Image 1 (cartoon, rainbow, N blue to C red):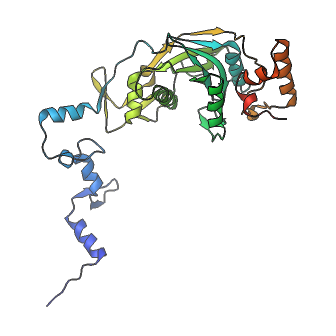
Image 2: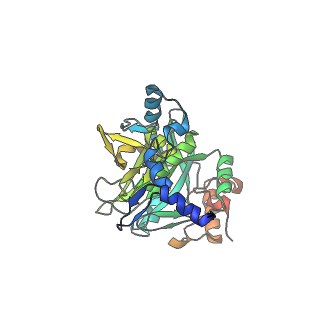
Image 3: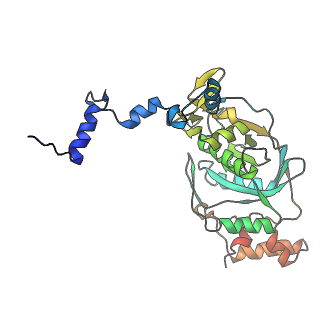
Amino acid sequence: MLYIMLTEENQVAHEEAKAPRKVDADGNVRAQEYADGAGRRGFRPGMLPLRAMKMQWTLTDFLDMDARFVFKMKRQEDAACAGVDMETNVARDFQQALRQTAFQQCRVGYLYGTFTDDNKVKVKCLYEPPQRGTAVDVELLEDPREDTVEKLAALLGLRRVGWIFGHPPREEGFHFASPEVFMAAEQQLEAAGGIGDTPFVTIKVTCNAEGLASVEGFQVSKQCMEMVAEGALEIGENPGDCAVNETFTAIVEGKEAKEVNNNFFLINVAISQYEADDMVYSFPVANREELGTTQGQPDLRAQIESAGKQGWCVAQNLTLTRSLSLTLNPKP
């Protein structure tokens, strides 16, 4: 009489013997893994089969379910933001930081101000978080003062109303790289509390071949916000396009597209400039040490003297500063 003992090793071998076979890229025949088959049997790539979701489906159920993963790309003509009033010193100072690297290093900052009743943005000051920029992108570093910035802004009656980024010159028609599209969408989602209208704006600063700076305002479309929120978009190999996640379908001009050009998501926002009469713009911006900008006692003295010449007391001056830098951490 023969007895067969099943151990974990030979049981696995037995199960693999029953599994479907496939030929890999090297020409070797191997057992097909569960994920290989499940991906093809799933309702969509990365999803369970229909019967694993529920036992009975009608055609209407199927079509409704499928429609949730299909985006028919449509351009949004009008932005939710009616326009941006940008404080002149804030715009000039950010451009100056970019010129310190000859516009060869990317940089970002957060804009603080107010939203008006007519859906405009009024920018009053700037905060640049700790960052490490290259000619291609920016790595945002951990910021131990992030919560403090938001609290101070609220005490000053301000809120985050946008973000600003600068980059080296790019080829004509290439406005946003895909990480910048994601950043704009995520910031708008946070400001709107979901997929909805918000004046939250993105300001882009660069220069042309002649070295002249350009400052442009944008928003991304609500469809872009929805696709980012749903995970339908990914950062692909081509920086000028967003890749479409394999679970989703994007229809561009009646055809399925694996990538969507970033310009499809962008809406222009008009910018005008003004000079604030209740702000002092002399204290150095924080987190620019790598650009050679530091904060010290002479800077503090200059800030106080500047306010004194305008008839303000020291207490007023300590709260009315360009970039929140002085109220954050004045250095002796």
